[in-house]
Image (cartoon, rainbow, N blue to C red; front, side, top):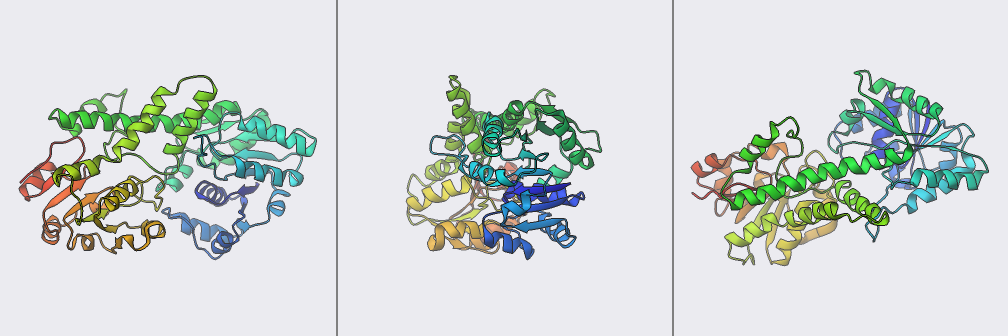
Length: 437
C-alpha cells in the first residue's frame, strides 16, 4: 500500500518504518526541514534500538521516503496516518492544535477512497470531530479510523513487529478489512486484530496506560508501607505476583514513572472524567502518588545527611526515565537533580544515551561523565535513578574505593541487601530496610 505518515516523532517514525519494512511504500512528512534532511542522511533524531538500521535499509530500498510537502505525500496515499504530537495542555487535557492543523492541510489533497488513520493518542470523540471537519472541508464523507499505538520505548520495534494485539476503530467494515491486510504480516502468530468503534479504540489507549500507571503507583505505595513496617517489598511482590490474577508485570517498586505517555495520558483521562461529570479520584491519586514518589531518594538523602546537602557532591547514575531510551520527559532523575541543585549540592552525572538531552537543559550546572565509575570520583554518595543493564553488576569494590564514603541511594533496587552489607555499604533502597555496615 501507499501510505503517508504525518509526523516523524517517536510513534510516526517507528510506525512508518515498520510498515515500509513489510513492503509498503511510506512517505513520512514533517514540518521540521532539518529533521527531514537528517533522516534522508540516515541520522535518527531519537534513540531506539534497531531503528536506525531499519530506516537506512528501507530508505535505500525506496520504500521509506521523507518530505516536508504534505500535499505530495497525501495525494497518492491510500492511507494517511496521523502521528503528530498531542502534548498535555494547561488544563491537563490533550492539546490537539497540531492535529487540527494537519487535518486542515491535508483535506484538499485527500483522495476520495483514502482513509485517514489516527495513530496519535487523542481524546474520545476526536475521530468523529475529524470526520466532521473533513466533511466541511471537502463536501464529502471521508473515511476516518483510529489505530492506537502500544509501543514501549526501548522495545518499540519488537512491539510493532510482534504485537500483543492490534486495535482499530472503524465505522466502515471495508476500512477495517484494509487495515487487517496491512497488519497481516505482523499477526502470523494468531495475535488478535480487534475491530471496534472509534470511540472504544480511542479510550482503549488511555485505559491501558492508566492501568499500567496505576500498578506502578500501587506497588510504590505498598513499598513505602512495607519499609515503614520492617518488611521487604521484594518478598511481598513475589508473594502476590505468583497469583495468576495479579502477575509480576509493572510491579517493580522505584522512584516513579515518567516519559511521554503515562503522565500525560493519566491527566488527559482525568480531564475526560471531569468533562463527563465523573470524579476522577482514582486517577488523581495515581498521579499524586507518582509525583510524590519522585522525591523518595531526596527524602532518604536528607535523612542520612540530617537535612543539610549543601556542598555535598553526588554521583547520579541514570537520567532517562527508563533504560534503552534517551527520553527524559518527566524523568524522576530530573526531579531529583532540581531538588539537589536547589539544596546547594554538586552533581556528577552519567547516562548511556540521555546525556545530551540533559545537557540542553542544565548546561554547565552539572558535571557530565562518559563512564559510570567516573562519576564516583570525589562524590559523597551514589544515587541510582534508571535501571540500565550496565548499572546492575558494577565492580562494587571499585565503587567503594572511588566514593568518599560507601553510601548508595538506589531508586531501582538493583542490589542485594545482604551483599551490600557484607561489602560495607550504607545502602538505601525502595521498600526494603536500610543496610548499615
